[in-house]
Length: 192
Image (cartoon, rainbow, N blue to C red; front, side):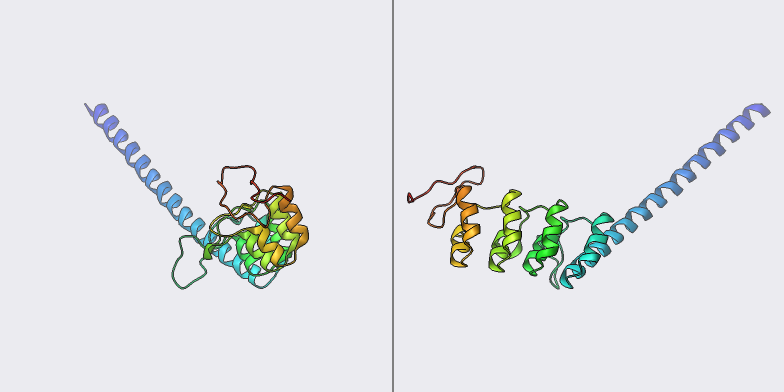
């Protein structure tokens, strides 16, 4: 009887130790997760600041240390659902060297940009021809939609090299129609 009580007591102690160890591990895991979220938010904030200050060295450091290039920046007092990504912010802030670096390190050239535009729109607007070429080469959004035609925008800006690149992809300044986003080629409305 005494052995049975000892076995039950030992079993109970083992269960208690395992439960407390599990609780300890759970709380450590939860604390680490919160720390990771805080670190991630700090990295994203630092990335935004580095881009704003045109500090390519800081951007490189953050990218090498795993900052999420696709996390949206909070660019206003109120949180936005779809803020700028790092690439969108670099182009919108007219930071071509940083934009090229981000593209070459896997930034999404198709990421949405607030204000109802595209990354390519801002690259053309700020006359960042090299950035626009990279966006086009890497599969960025080049087709006319929502009343915006990147080839027409480039033509108005006098960026003939971009107009030519877009024409090679089937997008022309005189296209007045919307193109299905799944379409691989644009149809000309007027033959050249």
